[in-house]
Image (tube, rainbow over all chains, first blue to last red; front, side, top):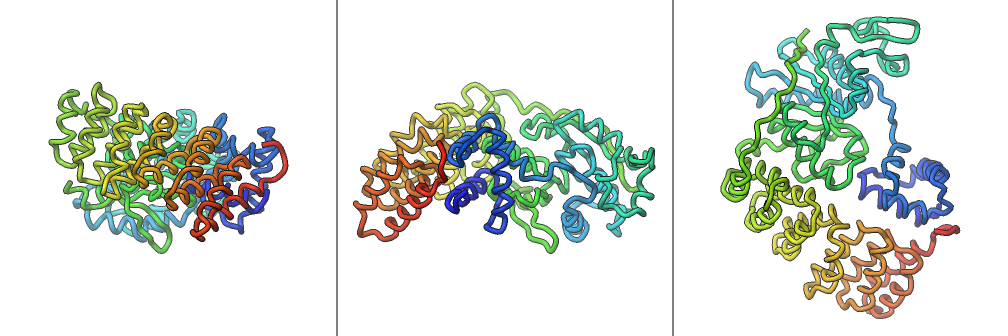
Length: 277
Length: 207
């Protein structure tokens, strides 16, 4: 791949998905391009790039998959969890009516690692955890993964970032290779089926204080991204926050949100003043 | 444990009769207009009503919902409802219209040759951006023909920038001819040189 081709690809990827790759990532990008060219039978970058631009046979999704860590695990991107307890909840509590539950949505939640991680993180790291009711909802379009989420059974790799003490406290070992989230914790997270681009499916979940919506919008085309952004906007309380994946940018997706920069993460906020609109 | 679990989600209430939705596009509060805009794309006559109401909508958030509903409709009628706003004096409205048209570029394709010949240079410039989202085989010939006749340097620069991303070797003659016509515009000559280098540096193979 020539320098010019690399730049072309990077420009396209940024515009289409928000994923930003600099020269430092060039080797990494070239490896994945080579893999995708081999998989699609493309003999030159130009023909592969045309296929990618035209999204022939869902090539954009295949390409993005080659760049993202599809594997999910407990405490993944925990800097956002740190931001949640350091900054986001503090801001929310300033404006929430006293006694109202703190509501957090993990969407898409896949097999449940993220909503359970949020629950464990709050129990371990938020000093005010006993002073508030906290409702955590995990949603996904795939009902198969939701069944796995409800069962809450995980292997070693999913637990690799948890200390032995945390595993001991929140899981029950069921055999040499698997642990199950304790029943109390499993029972405290609600799981539901949701298609993010269908308002009739997102609205019934109500308004949340914080939404974790990581690594899904990059797969959507422009129209679906706009609709999903508006649905997420409706599902946020005024002043509520949305956390995206590290390579995603909501400001490219929708002008509905304000960018907020905290010590641990960049997040997006539904403006407070919209409550008066 | 402070974690609580409430019952399953409740279906949301229906938003109202079709006539109510269309009336709310222009008569409601911001929140009512937002809700009406999101619903209008799915009802008979909704696309035309969205197009009419868009012209008077002042709230940026509600306007975004108007555009999204039109993008979702993805029809030539929706394209025609958005097009007049490419000429708006309001930059936010103009950019909103551009983003919406890019979101349905394939649907807008029949209108693009006319936009590229529009008497308003700003419209021609924005039309180049819409072409970026079309397949190269459709977009590159239109951009090359524009470069052959365009007399506004900024419009040419916009076309050149798009060609730098989507163009192939077939665009090189038009780029070279454009550079020769604008020798007194060093910025454009430099842009064309950079775009041509990028296009010309494609690795061997049949593309």
